Amino acid sequence: MGMTQWWQRATGRGRAEGSPVARPAATRREDPPVTWPTERPGARPEIDPDLPVLGVDGCRAGWVGAVLDPGGHGTPQLIVAATLAEVVRQAGPVAVTAIDIPIGLPDDTRRAADVQTRRFVGGAKASSVFTTPVRAALYAGSYSEANTINRDRLGAGLSQQAYGLRRSIQDVDAWLRQDLPCVVVEAHPEASFAMMTGAALISRKRSGEGVQERRDALSSVGIALPSATLQGVGRDDTVDACAVAWTAHRVKTGHSRTFPDEPEVFSDGIPAAIHV
Image (tube, rainbow, N blue to C red; front, side, top):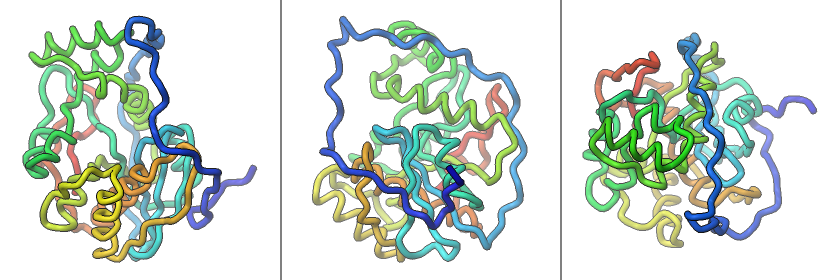
């Protein structure tokens, strides 16, 4: 199968939104541990202002990407794939990829990126910015082991939600250890919307009101929410991918800011900062 370029819309049959039913915690089997990568981050090219940008968010199918045209307006084209590498491959040449996932994992401290972005979002939505677990916890073989490691190193336990994201975080963590075709940054949808509108959005993003409020926010900056329904992709996932695509365009044009102002660098050598 040939490479799908950025302007070609991915298709798929939709299905009802909602998380699959999980096994009770007492009987849920743990995944085998993954050894964390030790290679240093690869090279990144200079930003080409004539290229589109890509916003990526996790979803049940793996990842959903929203490709925003070089001018930063219009209806983004959607891509869905099991791995981040495949989303980027299908997108074709892009200048910047913004991802809603932690980039740059701490060893034994809280990331300033999380602390400052939580403060920026503020209010009821501050909790949407979770504290990134330490690297050793994310590569532990079980939730109980990860929880113990995180408590020992950060003084705080690990939420099931954060641990549940570990495979996605590991996917990005490994992918960054090569020469990449574009600049790659971390973004957070609620922070993007707060920057977009001047204040955090207070509605629940999965509600009808929340989707409409976020659709209106995107419309105010010239972005139309795609109508496509993709298998394994919730409407809120599409909204979030479009929001971070807007941030990717701001990075491309030099209008973005970061939390913190100067990225932290931990033992992995990967700059840690959230862009808005």
